[in-house]
Image (cartoon, rainbow, N blue to C red; front, side):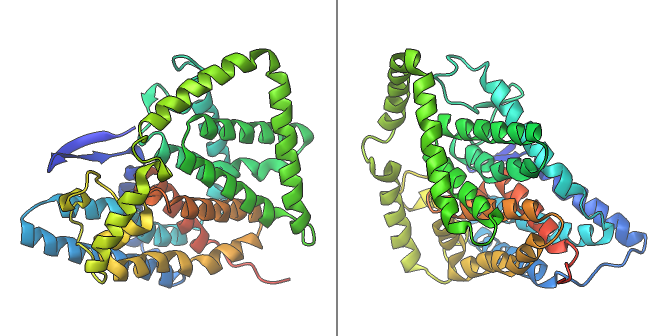
Length: 388
């Protein structure tokens, strides 16, 4: 769900509910500082790199604004750096609040509720089940559906698996919820999201497998997947003809949109155009000028890393990636703590969404960016775990 507040250069300027985290974190941090709560100096590097990236982007966008007298670069810049600003504010906030464990316990529950609501809403979509699942949430059209929104669903889906260590009934419910998440992604017909889901699931299984079982785990996953697929086909026997016909119609509509260039949904030509432009200005990029201003029919390069290279150049991409690399040791530390399953799910989601970003600008999508950097702020502020 998004709210359009203005139009800049014929493009909508939108906000979403999770953007409110910025205001909450800012005022919360300000109140704690005014109360005399000491700001911890730990986790300085990731926070500093995020701040440097935001400052660098602001400098580029301001330069282009002064040159072109257009607000478009500033709007594009704000959308890109918004999650980094959230991260920069949340890190000191979490440090001062010291409410360790609250979000690690509640976030997986929120993800489970989110998936069930999305599924129940899909039941009431026209022509269900022969439709694109996940198109509505609480009666509202989902913002960024299908690719961006369903990539978010795929990224957080490993959080459903955290409860596997509970009772038998709880484990069955956990697996059922995860299966529903898979069906939501599959029936959305978003190929990029399916890649994110599969990669994040495999990484989570690998991280949570006991030492010595990681190799055999891959074969187990393949076997379980094959048996599950066979069971579905056998149970759906009486309806297989109708299902095949309906799915064929859905796929035909999906493919017809890109029939002129079926190679990766036409993205290869867009990427070629982006690479050609980037090579002309590799250091500072195009300072958040619109991609469509350079003779293309698309507003984006349809690839996260090419998009950042185009907008901010090689310097911007290095700063962008450095924030993630600086958080690696905190994520590894979280695996050894009380909430190891939570941080395994987070790492799995990051790997999945990073791979999916080679075909889709996933983190420019505000909901995914806000969610991921909220979780990263938790990771870098978690207490240290002393080796036993």
